[in-house]
Image (cartoon, rainbow, N blue to C red; front, top):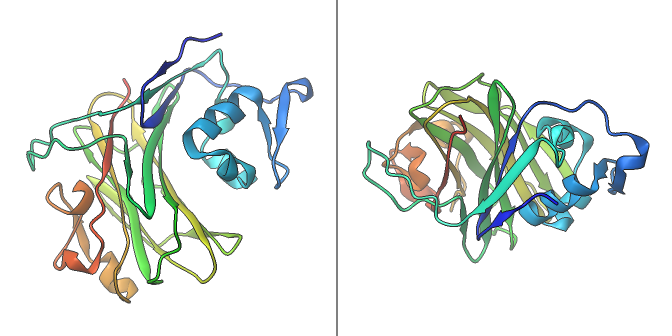
Length: 251
């Protein structure tokens, strides 16, 4: 059994090498969408995002997060508590790898291969939001580089998963805008790719507190001085200013 360093907070995954296909005898769990998991994949992800979210994962999300690459032989993981990192731009040091409020829980995880780390920003809604307008999810980087500018973004609401491509990109950040729909809102998620090495990735989810336009939601810069140390609007009061999370990039 692989030794696990379990503290509190967020699951950090580092995958060394790649696997090919999961053989039939290795299949441990098949979820509601027919997605197959090994025991290690199921138990590890359940610990990170909860059994209910694993239960409803789609094949597209499974592939996007490169879960098929996760085996007990090539994966190490830890649960971090207070991964405090000083941002030289803002001087803020109050970042952890997980942040939770009465209504939402924000986490950031990293799955790495030999070239890059796939970082998943996951926002779980614990209660349904009253305001249904444009929200923003994304990351800002410091001391590292993006591997590419893709940003697979999904929102699960009303039992359906919606994909979004409305995004803002810069050399130091990628943000995606999601439109909250009617029905029960379960989660929003974004996957970005960062080159391995050094540096820090900051992640944030900002919920609009009143009805706003798509243009307004996208009109931000990436700054450590903004909400969650990622986004900065001319009027930050349009959003709930939920705290952010961060992880060090794996070398």
